[in-house]
Amino acid sequence: MANLALQSASTALTALNTQLDVTANNLANINTAGFKAARVNFQDLLYLERAQPGVETGAGDTSPIGLYVGLGVKVAGTQFDFASGPALATNRPLDLMVDGEGFFQFDIGDGSIGYSRAGNLIINREGDLVLGHEPGKRLEPSINVGDNIEKVEVAADGTVLVLRQGTTVPETVGRIELATFANAAGLKPIGANLFVETAGSGPPTTGPAGEESRGQILKGILEGSNVDPTRELIELIRTQRAFEMNSNSIRAADETLRSVSQLRR
Image (tube, rainbow, N blue to C red; front, side, top):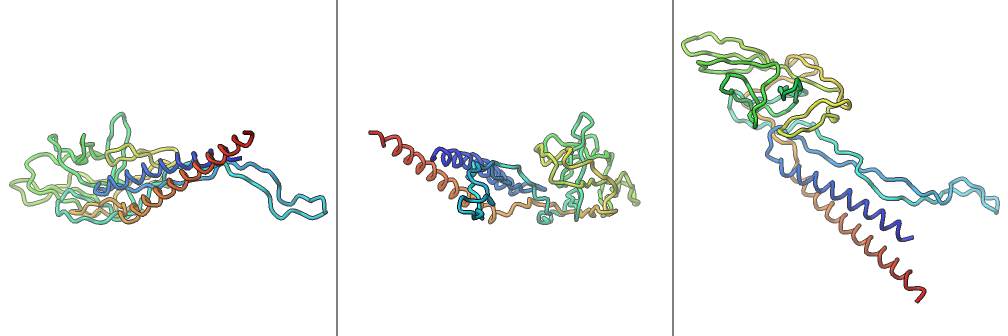
């Protein structure tokens, strides 16, 4: 009956609304450093089985196909694309980019660590290196550069060197460590360009940049958002057209039910 069509089309409208929300968020963050675009994964729902394939008919034949009617669609999840974004040259010594795999680590309080591909670091009033977003999460392990700084340099292996006023020899004040995950797509976004570990991502493997599978650190460069505006706009149009088609399905099913209800008149 047409009521199944109503149900299937209504589930599609709900799922497409979620896709529209995700696409809009991707476009909104097109200029967010280190942002990773998300996509919506769909899956079909249960099927009503009205005839099984391979059943012997009264004439002795075997039915080659069955008869199944689907009950719609739902959003199975959102999947982040952790492909590297474009390298944006800024020439700021504390603008850093991971060239390869790895996340910067930040202390987000309560003993928890946040992970980010954004490397726009600044020095707070205590002399700590922090992420240049509100409220300025400290790099983990923490690195304090002190005061009387004339120049700060970050080497490809994450070593932080400071040249102080009145000196000619740089001083090593720490080394930036990166984290990698077996399943980065399982990380949980918490805003402020940060992700946190989940059971799906598995525990992090940490260590110096440039070792094992971790990438090197490029200075004076930021990783831009990996959102592809052309692809997102096409997705936006496809979502809008799919929404319209499913709205038409609802109208057609409604008209069918109205015709059926008037048969007895």
